[in-house]
Length: 350
Image 1 (tube, rainbow, N blue to C red):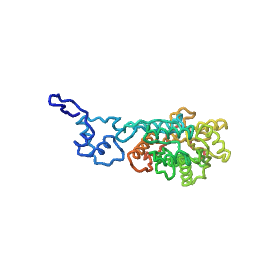
Image 2 (cartoon, helix red, strand yellow):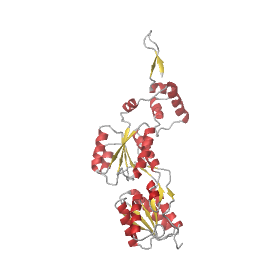
Image 3 (cartoon, rainbow, N blue to C red):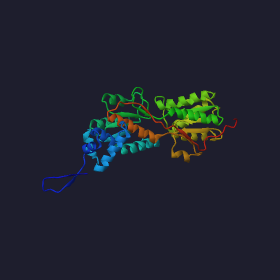
Image 4 (cartoon, rainbow, N blue to C red):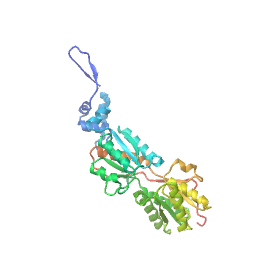
């Protein structure tokens, strides 16, 4: 706070310090001071400058007013996150990471489900048109999704989360191909040669990346080409039906990599119905690590993905656009890892 005199006979009163006061004391421009105080990820300044601004704000007791910050940039300080299904715990972890990072940067996150397809998109369009959100995080987009063209035409800041939309330069994704490579190496280390993979929809780029990593690594290890079945969904039914197809195509399969924890639930059910012991007759490994894996019979080994880090990275990418930066793809640097439980056994013939 600063002291100012009002009239000759008035007593000194405390007046809220302004951003200009902080900038003046620190010897920087007001926009630079604002970006430093709001921790804008695209700002590149010397650490000495950053510390000088923070010290000036502390000295003056500067407290940015949320409404003033929004009006200064004609912003709502809110972003929206569109996910395919709120009941899926995978998205809950992404949302958690996004919420944490947005809160650190002074933003609020609104959540919506794209379960109704284009209907949900229209609602988001109205939110953006009314200025209620500054940008969108989209985890439900596929190639040809009608929302994509609308966003690009209206120049709305947006990021595709865990999706690859060719040519958008707005994709934030994990190294999902590495999960397929991990799975193939883990099975090979346990002596398995005949492998299967229950994949997801072909139009989801991340599904293709998992499959490609799995197939490429199996070939590098000198294994027979794994049998891959592309299912239309990531749910339990897809896992059950997918395992049935795999075993019909190649009865010698002894290890299966599923593309979701829900699919592996269905695969366990199908294996039990077929009289197969897991892991004695069939080893299973699931993509994505969730608490549910501990409570299956047997507890299922999984590949843990950096979902919280993905949510945080997505917010940084969106804020970069909101601040005027050019859209660019980002890859989460944290690698996937296997969480060992009890669903993978050493192959009897190895």
